[in-house]
Image (cartoon, rainbow, N blue to C red; front, side):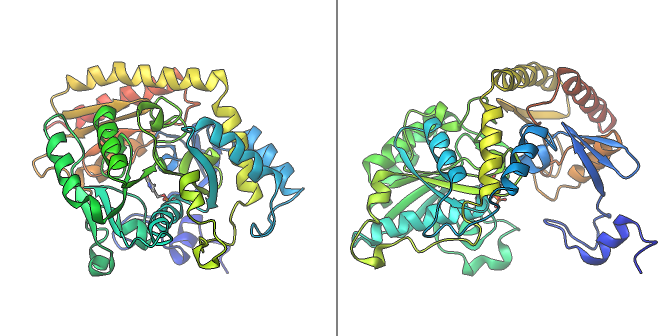
Length: 427
Ligand SMILES: *Cc1c(COP(=O)(O)O)cnc(C)c1O
């Protein structure tokens, strides 16, 4: 029946794509193969994946080492219930990950993606206080934050057109500006005034990804973290995007002088090969759930908690990440981005060039201003695709987040095309 239909036609008949207006968006491009930084369509046309497939791919597509490890694990133990049972990959992964995190992080809770990692973190914080007979429930977050798409994660994310239909159903969150030299003192006062009711502060450290790669200074964030500690506000550091080398250091935590109570990971955790989320916590948090009273248990879990295949993919990816070659690559990308950002700054249609590690972003100057729905984003997206480069501007914000295996030549190819496209769209 479907014999004569193309992949695209079959897709359109049955699939509903994420963040996609299915009426007006063109058909999805079928990808049949991935290798390194490249994705290939049915005709063999290649695309450089300059956004690491929504910021997840670290070591390139179809990485043979990760594939081999997952294959071996698949033939050994593919899944086991994680309540009452455990397995080597989960134990090893927790051990290896905790070694890389701030030393107060001592326990690992597994889930399925970034949103669930955030849900778990929020529940840990609220119940931490509840278990001690404290009813603190208010949550502090940054304006324009993005922490995921499930209801809790949406609630702590900035209110936007994405969350609008659910407005009244989202719980109340106090949103504050990201810190700058100018507003730091007033932010601190704002926090002091509400501290008694606040259970926790959740933040994307250094880079607010989905908001358009907005960046803030580590020292000012550290200052806010320090104040929160003093005021007994728990800190949830959402490193779902910034983790695993994106910012040039292994974690954004490596830029900060204060330690969070809880951290969230996903995206690059498995090198972008399998879905998995992790929420880590300090012993202080963990111990608030230890009790003879079983109602103090953290009642949360997913069918695939600590799936052995995903754990193995993460182990293999972290092994690759810590190799000298990979760290050199991360430095190379960071250095080349920095050089290119100087050229970008000279372009008349470019403003707010910002960079940290492997993340480079800038605004395309438009009259209508920054908005996810800014039409320029779509036109740029299509132009880059024509040139064999996958970029996914957030409105008029253009950014690069390449896989770490990208070569110097491939980066130059992307940079060259960016300059050409910018000139083409010059007003
Ligand atoms: C992407 C993202 C999430 C959500 O992760 P999903 O796996 O898409 O649910 C949460 N927090 C941050 C900072 C993110 O960038």
